[in-house]
Length: 434
Image (cartoon, rainbow, N blue to C red; front, side, top):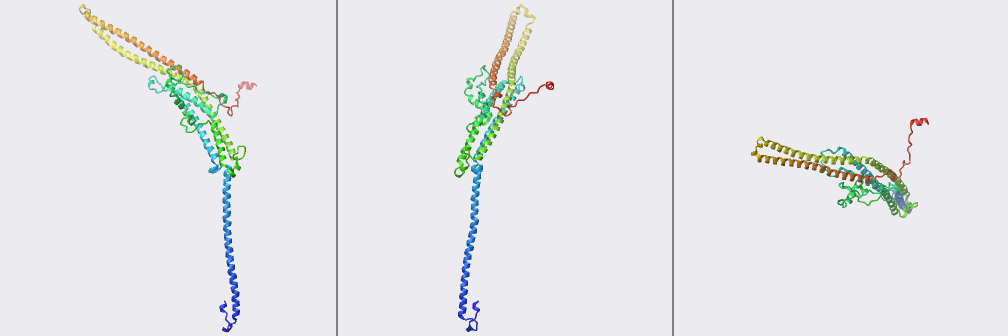
């Protein structure tokens, strides 16, 4: 702008000093503007940095508070991968223990069905021409093994549940021979070595709690639940340290959520145990009912078996006798044909004597055959009758020993509903008269 101002000497209206003064004033203004511009830029930069700080710090603070809140909530309520360990452990172990009990009851039910089926087989599966020698194991022994397994399984499962009164815990079933060739029911010499394996097989239907094929240490149901309880408490002691130790409250020094969870777990366990004991008790009552049919089935099988064996062996002897009798009759007819009238002639005395000797020998041999056949028939009846007697007595004693260990209802703990006494209804005439 000053460049357009003309000096006096150039015909203008401005003096040189005046222009210099204006220039000085403008330089001061330019310097002031530059200074303000720098200050404004610095202030804007400061404001931008402050805005950036105000955006970042609350986010970091919020993130920190959020993580702390999540940590606090997880610790308080037992949530998440870390603090949820006790709850998950308890749920998995509890589910495992309950499954074991359900498998055991299922095994008892299946074996009960097998026993019923064996009793029915006694009347339906055997005919007079049945080959008992091809039978791997007699039906009476199969019934005995099944009965022993059922009684032992029920006693073991009841003890596992803690379902018996302390003063009424059933005694274990004494070992019984699985042979019926002797009167005694005690284990025979050839059974002693295999009996431990047999004892394990008898509990096989119980599943893991029957010891066989179990990959973990055996614990009874109440003991397993207490172990779950203690392990959960040990876990929270290790997990809740530092600031989180404040969540360990109460006499047991465990989080409040765990106290509630364990209380609910024990309530669920008690309901499950009651249901299992009730099912087991019903199974024992059903077994008692089935046992009314067992002697009838067993002794019917033995009677039919040995009667059939005697009749079949006697039929074989009689058939053999019939064949030999036919041959004897043919020989007798031949001798009669040879006995022609001219043998009466003294000249044929030798032929007559020879024919007579042959006939006497035939008659004696046939008489010996008759005596031998009668003796064989008597021996067959006597030997098989003795075998029947021994087997019958053996089974009587075995069944008595087994029935003596049947579990009675009074042996079980009191269950909800047992105290309700059902009132008997009186006669309608008596009621109306009152």
